[in-house]
Image (cartoon, rainbow, N blue to C red; front, side, top):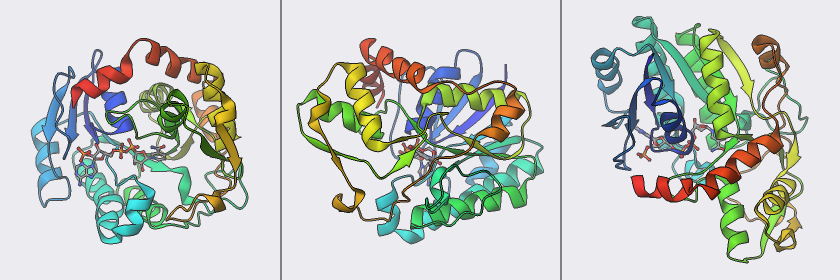
Length: 304
Ligand SMILES: NC(=O)c1ccc[n+]([C@@H]2O[C@H](COP(=O)([O-])OP(=O)(O)OC[C@H]3O[C@@H](n4cnc5c(N)ncnc54)[C@H](OP(=O)(O)O)[C@@H]3O)[C@@H](O)[C@H]2O)c1
């Protein structure tokens, strides 16, 4: 059993990760503004950007691994609050990496596919990023700061979906909520990505830690698709009407921050390092649906 210090424990990735691994590992989850209770792991409230907080947490808990999921992850909020995004997404990861390196603690840092401008697609780790938004620019600065401070760290560029405490955090939840309420919605046919179900991401990250992978890795699903196709796949799996999703261009969406059109990532490096293919999209979507049938979304809401 490992001792895991997990930041962002109230977030979409952090909470799913904490709940999934708390039975086998000793998990210390850090949340900030969202109070959680009854989750089966140790919950710590902390504003991580406050001076001294990171060092004191690592000193007190002395984890085997710190998984840094906390971020300002709402792309449009980052556009409105660029200084805060800089502090949380760019500066904080480097501070955690330094503090972890000083204590020989393994660090996993979560970054994003959005560091690319999306003109090419099928990006490898060796491709040059070109961030288009405040979120993307600050996340790229964060991953650079981590690798500069701590060459043993694993930096994972991810894209995932799952159920969240608010029920509104992931694109998949947005599709399910609208479909369930018979609300017509747009699905962008000109934005491409490689979504991975959050439980598959959790398993893949833990395997990468167990194999002591370090450096930069693309950790996304093996299947590329448009956001429209993603919505239709969800509608079919849940038995809702896919006609409620109108194919549309992102230009029609009125979104604040610029979006990269093709954020499909190449996972050859990861697949080679792990020695097996990544979990498939259909099986991942089935897990998302099974959780829905089992009442997992209501369970998550009850924690906050
Ligand atoms: N969601 C996606 O599809 C996606 C795609 C690509 C990459 N990512 C990356 O994946 C990671 C996890 O994203 P997510 O969607 O799970 O994020 P999320 O749901 O927005 O959760 C963010 C978490 O960070 C915590 N946090 C933010 N600022 C903090 C601070 N100053 N001090 C302490 N905690 C703080 C929040 O705590 P409170 O809520 O308690 O305040 C929350 O637990 C991020 O690095 C994100 O950039 C996400």
